Image: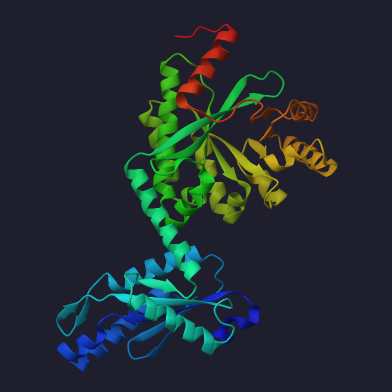
Length: 413
């Protein structure tokens, strides 16, 4: 097996699969029924594996998968769970007898668990043997890796419960005009208020939500809640600026995404005004389809900003075609402006580029007056960061908005 992928020196996985209690099928139904089961299992395995995964029967009721170019073992575990479910969730028809089976899997990684085929197979078989004597459906040869996967799946279960129990909350961070310091926009940021872990920042759970597809459910909730909160401000007599919602790659790829946004707007009687923020790398993943989806968003009156600009790769030709109104400069560039001439030059260049495309610029992560002064001199329009305000829960954001209205002399209900 190692020879399959060793030429490009990429890590890959060898997964050895055993059909549980296969011997009892032969003993209770007949060897012919057992052969029928093996044939049907092999057909389903090949179909579930697809063209990119190598499959083989390596003896008796033992099958193998070679999964090339594995860069993330969590993704591998999720893929295994999903595809094995496809194989065994429906019963097998053994000449009129319907039979459900289950499997055990041992996984070894190349080259960490073996740099040649013989070692890799031996270690995958060792992992399979341990799985067969445990309650786990599959185990990695590396004990540490198995623990990591188990912890990730435990976290996934907690996240599913968190969605059911409404444990997620929205925090809001204001964006202000660089010149006047008045609030001109608000970004909503999701947090997980876990009974076990406390307030969890998004970097701790968003990647797993994206891998499992739960991001669609959470993203839809964030969209609805942000609009509901903005409607509450409106009904309280607070003229709040638009609320910016971050969009994940999986959300934007949904064909029905524009319809979901439109429905949320209707549910709030048109009183909610939202913007969308998309990452630079997301835009470039499927440029033509994304342009179409973003154009549909613009038709709803929604403004779109490219978030974390400068951290990915953008073709200027495509950037000019995107129906976006703003670029957000990543905090990494802003934080180094005062001490790194190269960072200062990059920020200046990005602002000039945005203005040449008739886009406004929002600087993220502004923490000092020195940074704010530099941004004003560079003609950056808006900024957000701890200099202005940390992310605030709804009630505190309401107080901040009321205070601004009172200072401006506008009436507040």
